[in-house]
View 1 (cartoon, rainbow, N blue to C red):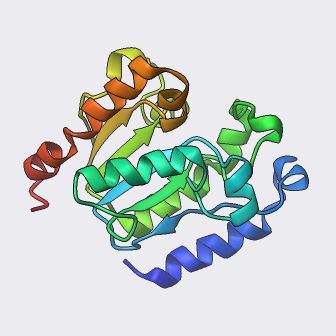
View 2: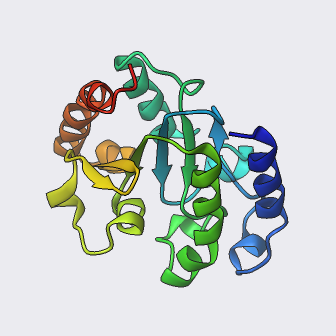
Length: 187
């Protein structure tokens, strides 16, 4: 993968004015991490702290994600992390179908540039981006083959922070990632 292609996409995202989110957000949050990663994590949208810093998953959800990565001997240097929406929705509301559609081409191009083997979705919106008719309660923790990608849906870390039983499930599902890596021949 060419890091210059991701940089080109980052600049386009930062200059994007195709929807109203760019007016209420402080800055775009294009994504970050290893441009040659075999594993990509996709969330739904930047939150307050992500909007402040321009980096995905830096708030409480990000701290939980970092902890979980450490539990499977990975770090942000090993993976790439992004969101389906590139600007923060006001009041952290759910992204609208129009906003998802507007940002779709950016994420598609980012995934083509990185060319990961495994895409791990965090939450229902990012899962539904790839599996439109699936429910997170039925699909979490179950790998799906999606063309050249292995897709692995998980609950969003924010849901785990709000709901102790979801956090337990998130941890259990996260700890299966090394098995998925092995089955995908990444070791």
